[in-house]
Amino acid sequence: MLRSMPTIVLNMKIRYYGLLLLLLVLSLSCATHTDGTSRIVEAIQAGDNKLLRREINRGEPPSGDKDNYNLPIYLAILRGNRSAISILIGAGVDPNYDWGSEGGTLLTNAAQLGHLHIVQLLVSLGADVNLTSGHSALYRAIINHHTDVVCFLRANGATLNERDEMALLRLMEAGVDLPAASEREGVRRKRLTSP
Image (tube, rainbow, N blue to C red; front, side):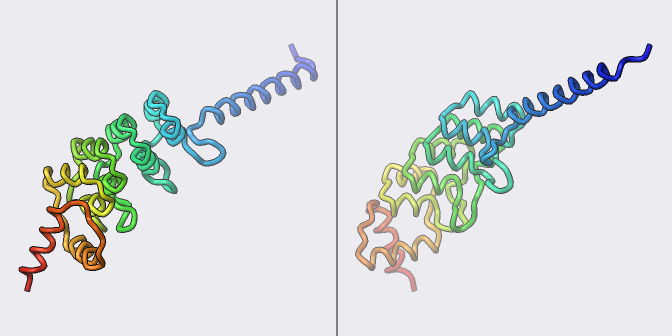
């Protein structure tokens, strides 16, 4: 039995609109918003760790996209969100990720901000206290007057590299007050005994 032309057209329209509806639903559930931010970034900005876990479980890359690589963990460090950092590192973000000489490592950024609880977490998750392509975490904590972070890093084996020592010497010679007396004295002793 042949169908009438209006029935065929109606079926095609139903399929067409059904397909459009399916595409609309899929686009609404995609991990990236039209403004380019990922749902992972949105979850971290909102402090919603349930959404963060759900998006990672759905396959959203925990390190972000190629244009904003490791933006999610950087935001979590800025916000001091221990849970989000644990979730992201557990999902595969390298605790020793380094943005380069200007950006630093996850640890150097946490030390610079004075987030002792984040510094402790990163070290417990495997962050190297002496890894750097620029200034060390210890240096950044010293110049930002975060003595609790300085003490923690020193207790966990952090040292100043040559670049850091030279920068601290220049700051001391310029009369800048540095908070960690033991670090100042160590740099002065080294300067006095160096050839």
